[in-house]
Image (cartoon, rainbow, N blue to C red; front, side, top):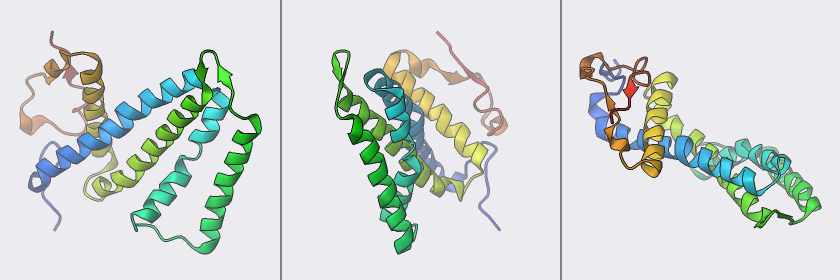
Length: 183
C-alpha cells in the first residue's frame, strides 16, 4: 500500500520536505533557467547559445553519474567526452568575439549555466517523480518558480494567494489555474 496523498497531491508525511524540495526545483528551472537563458542571448549569438544549450542531456548524464544514480559504460563515457570535444571545437573555431559592448564569453558562460540548470532539474526531479505524478510535480514547481521570480521583480508579490479555495479542494489539476493577483 502506497503513501496516502492529500487532495493537493502531496503526501502529508513528507509535506515540509517536499514543499521545500519543490520550491528548490521551481527556483532552478522556472526562475534561474529563463533569466540566464534570456540574458545570455543578449550577449552571445543565438547559434552559439543553442549549440551550448543542446549539451543539457550530456550534463544530465554526467550529473547522474556523479550522483551515482546512473552507470555508464566505457563506450558511453567516450561518447559523452567526444561530444563535448566536438562542441568545444565548433565554439573555439569562432573564437572569443565582442558583440556590442559585451564580451560574448559572458553570454557563453550564462548559457552553460542555463544548460546546467536544466540538467540539475532533470536529475533532482527524479526524486519527486518517484513519489508523485509528473503533472503534480510540474504544477508545483511552476507555481513556486513563478513565486520566486515574482519576489525578484515585484516586492508586493507575496500577496499572490489562492483565492479562498479550501485546502481539501486544492489538487494538482486546479492549483496553477487558481493563482490570482490581489493588490
